[in-house]
Image 1: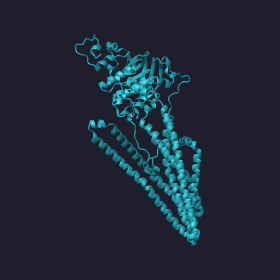
Image 2: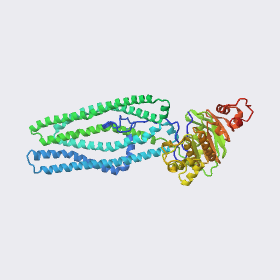
Image 3: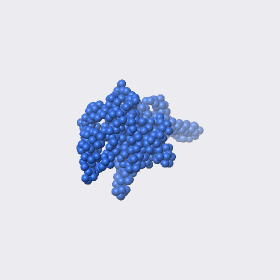
Image 4: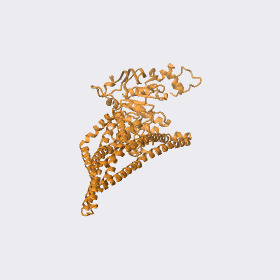
Length: 638
């Protein structure tokens, strides 16, 4: 497996490491497409419906009292909805038909009061349920984010970061919307359905039977259309995901597109993908739009049947005109909950599937807990020793094979070798982002597995080739190395790192808020801030991973000067492809295929004329006529 890149931070204290070679983040659509049951696109099938609902209830149950109050309001609201059509029957039969208008006003006032109360309780239950769902989602999002902070680096290395972000945002939003809308709606629909059915039977069993005849037809048509619509919404979501991914790639890769003049090619790709999205969206919306009119046709058919049958029964004096008018209202009220219940099916499935994705991350094993008698490192000297270390990212594919070396306090150890040899893996193991398979890693003679992780990492500092900066003021980015540092200590660290001068030339100096990742700074400036951050953290052991790559010569001198100051008195591990930067290291370890194949000083390794010699010669040509026994330092830029 390739050598993993360690964290984009100058001190391991604080945020976890970010893998530089992580997979491209997938981009997909958020909620809000379609209508009715297809609000979230095609419903994903949950793997464990019962178990997931049980876990969701564990979050909801924290607010049992509020839920009981909401359900009480739902019951009252449903009862008001059920009894309101009875006022129509009373008004027609008792006052309009007999032409007795004296009591009609009182009935109308009663109807208005019922409808106002119905609207009021609808608002209150919606408001209360919104607060409950947002509190629940607040808890879930906090738990998921907190869980992410405890996960080992391998989780972030093996999962697309965009997918993890989607679980924290999109999936939790799906759960929130479903809990907010569906829970109350299902409960309300069931109560309304039962209450309405009872009143309908009481008014006219015959008309009730006629109404029930339409229900199976409604359910069959709804199911058939839902299947087709779900397929098209799935195509729409997939196409939208591809379109978003293409947009993200083009925005990120604008320099490459312009350098190779591939604008027209990208436009053609976008038009093709956009056309695919347009076609699938049209079909999805067409089928989704059919549902409403079709239900209206069936409802109107029901009303016609009730009117004809009711008129006949009224002529036979089996039922009153007021009862027929009320029954028409009840038939509409009866089919609405059935449609609503059907509409919730896909939405609930989507929410449960999203919850499973959230719980999948919550169920990931965190970093192993510190052993019971783990110690705190105090007055650390910085002695590091690897003893017969074996390690593999994938079982059976070792990346490090029997690696042993000893770094004395204050020594500079350089790690060189081809890409994927295992250099950065050594750093990952020293920081305990991964645990070794066999062997020992000792710091000051103590196995790092017996040291508290927080203590070990607080004594380590890392400066990488690609420094990660946060969208915060410059002073806070440096203070990340030690959060308790004063402003003056931060500025002293910046001066020590040769960063103070360029910082003061920024628009707001130390208070300048950086853009995402510090993209408004040059690579060299970002490196100087990373070094300042590491200086502030005052680590006993320093790791420099390609810290001077991809910067100009003048800035490189500033960075190297700051690095030399930082390395003084500290045990330092330097990973570099530019061999000229590590000639003064106390020990150079040459790594190839997971093994240390050579070790020694720069001069010693050149004299051996082995692997290191060939690497060095590939970077620096030997002048003609040079005697092989002459001092290479003099002739090769030393």
